[in-house]
Length: 111
Length: 109
Image (cartoon, each protein chain N blue to C red):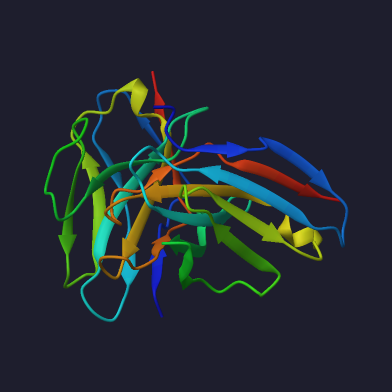
């Protein structure tokens, strides 16, 4: 089991563009959470998906949206990118909520 | 407000010396507390959580509800302990996890 995988590893986008990040959970996990980690900060919770629905959401604008597929994989979409969206985006999967396993992250740079 | 505070950005400790990484939290209720660790070029991983009362890699953490603290301790630092450490809390099952800003632990030879 490769654990949680994320793609792409790095991404460079221009202000105003849209981006989609992908996450495949660890085998046997059905819940996916997304976090944004800005430089020098701890991860900040964006939202969590379970049974293909958004179960919980952090304090992020509607420009951030997501999706979970029947195979439990997930996407994070960000519209109208701002310079401040530059960060490491982490995906974490779990079966029981506390046992969150993190992926390596996608480094997004907005220019 | 729900908040996790790690007052030290960087902590340098000599090998063999005791380590204490400080963590204070603010939460109305009884949260679950965790410590996560990120070694160089590795992904973020759970180190320990207070409900399991385990000692992982020689680290322990005691929840002090009166002082709202969850400090991470190890009696004798090892070079392989150098890493980024994040204190975190959750309101309970299925609740979001709130992280502190992290403390970089640097073990000096």
